[in-house]
Length: 222
Image (cartoon, rainbow, N blue to C red; front, side):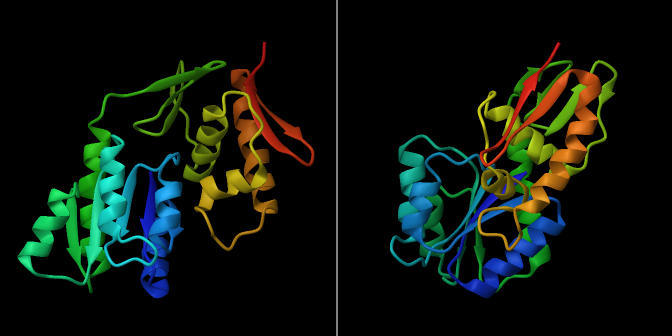
């Protein structure tokens, strides 16, 4: 699952990122509300975590903007405010849950799991390519014989290339899909995952093509 975290406290943001990545999620981290407003308009995250006290634009405004444009993704609000009126304000703005700082990561994880069940309850969307199909809800690649055993980062890579519908995707965008925006990981890591995934897909008439200096694209082949 892909989770967007909007948090300006560096240590809190790092703690959340590491925890979620250890749980197998891709994570995008942003540190101010203005950047979040722009990012959330066309990203592909499944759940959004927003701190209320943000620079540039506050978290409640970011949340209200999401709901105003019809973005119904689950949102977990983070805040140091514990008064009931503040909780009500956050929930009325469209939040699905509310967590008060400081919090234990185990509790944070439980809240994320609860929100992820809401995502899983959505109607399944399946996309086909070659002899494979991708279940976007379960994030699972399937053949006629059943699900393929593919590591989660390779699944994220497959999904990003599939959603591009044959268009070239740069190494940096693929890196963001694997580790989240702003992760301290070098682009050559992408080449390793692409090589592994390419070998898995070949028997199913799906090919990953390298466009040197530009990136990669995926397409079905005869």
